[in-house]
Length: 116
Image (tube, rainbow, N blue to C red; front, top):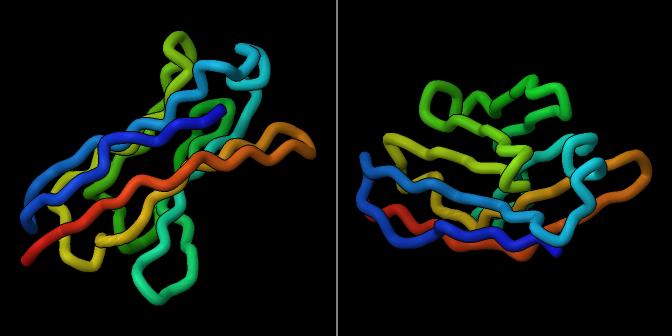
């Protein structure tokens, strides 16, 4: 139901835009969901990167503040993560997650690799 895309290989300092499409999700569920992007670096635990509430309030991990921007498009039913000034330590598999009440939806990850 959730499809993450936009990952790839980029040099340090470059940019990528990830998108999590929820095209099959009922619009009211999409609009009422709190959404987060997580990432899991190689050999490490999954960590929260950015969150956006149903009311569009956003929060970021300290490591990405000022470089990443999370946004949501309630018409296209997508949540995007604009990643600028990428660093090798941003290399990870990125996942999107929707929470609606007690429902918890995970998308398949997309690989982001940043070369130095």
